[in-house]
Amino acid sequence: MATTTSSTIAVIGGTGQEGRGLALRWAAAGYPVLIGSRKREKAERKAAELNEQLAGHNPHPIRGLSNGEAAAAADIISLVVPYAAQQNILSDIREGAQGKTILTSVVPLDPANPKCLLAPPDGSAAAEAQRLLGPDVAVVTAFQNVGAHALQAWDRPVDCDIFVCGDDRDAKRTAMDLVRHLGLRPLDAGPLVNAVAVEGLTPILIGLNIRHRARGAGIRVTGLP
Ligand SMILES: NC(=O)c1ccc[n+]([C@@H]2O[C@H](COP(=O)([O-])OP(=O)(O)OC[C@H]3O[C@@H](n4cnc5c(N)ncnc54)[C@H](OP(=O)(O)O)[C@@H]3O)[C@@H](O)[C@H]2O)c1
Image (cartoon, rainbow, N blue to C red; front, side, top):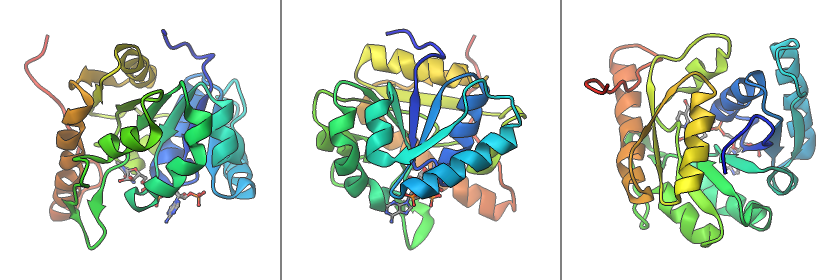
């Protein structure tokens, strides 16, 4: 399925740092965006705040819903929650996600030290999500290596490439369109099993930001045409 800006995107975790940045950018790119939260009122408040921030640059107003409602109402689901919350949140959205694409940006950081990965038994957060959601959901990954600070500056370009992993060809094409429509270069990083490598880059970037007193360390691949 080719992605068009008429596809509705639910951003589960859109009240948080990374999700807010993605919601702003997809809304500014013309997508109808739904923000999901454990508390509907919190999502409604955040949606109003983001609409104000976009100041009319979004053709469709962002709406706030509960996580379950947002997943059920969307065509595509973006998952941007802390890894510790992933299991609970996936059980809330599992029913509404069946037959859909889930684009996850979740990284399993060590809560005691975000400069380190704490890889789950499935290998990656993405592989765990695929197992928990079942075979009728196409899990793809992107945006694990771009910081919230850069995404939230929605009217400025982001200086990095975006790796996309997934096993379902159509879902991966959809994810690459969602990246491209934000003005970023998507790079096909292979099957979902490779998500462990992409997730593993995030704590490295966090460590670099800390050591260099920076905020925007990112990945740019050289040598490609
Ligand atoms: N921040 C970044 O720069 C960045 C960069 C790359 C990847 N990521 C990844 O993106 C994901 C989200 O990161 P973030 O910094 O945006 O996280 P966050 O702001 O701490 O949390 C995002 C949202 O998740 C929900 N949430 C938080 N704690 C929860 C809990 N214990 N149980 C259930 N829901 C909870 C909250 O939504 P409600 O309260 O509204 O339900 C919250 O607004 C993480 O996996 C992170 O590794 C982040």
